[in-house]
Amino acid sequence: MKIVIDEGIPYIKGRISEEAEITYLPGDKISRDILQDADCVIVRTRTKCNRSLLEGTGVKLVVTATIGKDHIEEEWCESNGIIVRNSPGCNAGGVAQYVYSSLFNLGFNPLKDNLGVIGYGHVGGKVVEWSRILGVTTLINDEPRRESGKEDVEYLPIEEVLKSSDAVTLHVPLTKAGAHPTHYLIGEKELSQMKPGSIIINSSRGGVIEEKALKGFLQDGRLKGVVDVWEGEPKIDLDLLKLSHIGTPHIAGYSEEGKRRATFMALEAVEDVLGIKTDRRGLESEADPQRILSREIIESSYDPVKDSERLKGNPSDFERIRNEYKYRHEPLYI
Image (cartoon, rainbow, N blue to C red; front, side):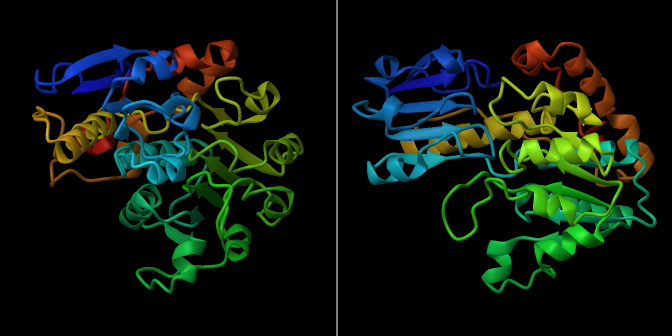
């Protein structure tokens, strides 16, 4: 049994039973030749797991230590008997921390301002959970869930969320097909529906917002922008970076706890699907149930402006800054 692993995945080395042959490589060095006799590959977003990489290999299982799966050609994998597993919800707490730290930095008032949340999956759900604790009025849009008739929360049309919110945060996957594609979900029309001076945050995937349109609204001062994910990463739009009030190198979910959860889930997938023993001890941490979540605690836990200043000062170092990022602690674990 051979497993190829992106060497950048934290805390994973030495945790898979010696019955498997393990090869660690940088994500961009994982090739079809390397995978010829592999049974499993464990990746992050920088490895495109598509037909050109996987066809003709021995891979039976693709695991990504991320929530998103848009770097995986999932339909092709399924039609060719390859199981795909991700790490749902692993970084939800880190993203919620990023969102609220950014909001507070830009003057969002939890006592009077409304927050629009587009996408009510693991991450969007965590942001809504924090909103309830903080007493923030939250407006939720999730078209697939709304259309399916789910009634766990009140789902509003996206137009209503955009026009009624003082800030909007996006938590959807990047999709280009299906009934509700999210590619350029937010463009000129949608941005024009937002309140003048309101905040828009994208920590989901580049391509969910049409960057050209967003630049116009930031240039005119009609909106405040927080951008963590970019089209064409690691080559990013430098003008958009300059215009963004906060611009960071895809690190919204980069918390110590989130990375441990992701590795735990990746190892769990290996054990469940391949039957290989893994050591997951110490990868799950439980927050103190007495810990109180407050604005002060969130703000003291993380300052996204420092990460923004670092990127704006060295935009060509996007990938290096991201790869060398020192994982922060989520406020409930400090």
